[in-house]
Length: 95
Image (cartoon, rainbow, N blue to C red; front, side, top):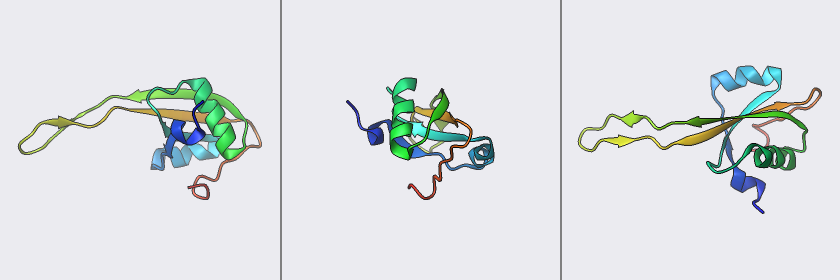
């Protein structure tokens, strides 16, 4: 079985996600092969909270503009976690 740190790579700390934290929604960069059940388990193990729902998004690669060699950004998978009422994650503390 995988450990929670193998599934959850890092939290996403961007402005849009910080606004959603008031609605008990948090975003994480997760392993590309992780499914929703594994992500739910990893968040509950890592932060000791109860997860209400998990949404996943595959962020496709985009072309990079370079001078000599054309390249692309890597594909990533993002998970948006909704917590049950009364639950809270302090992401900056748990880094």
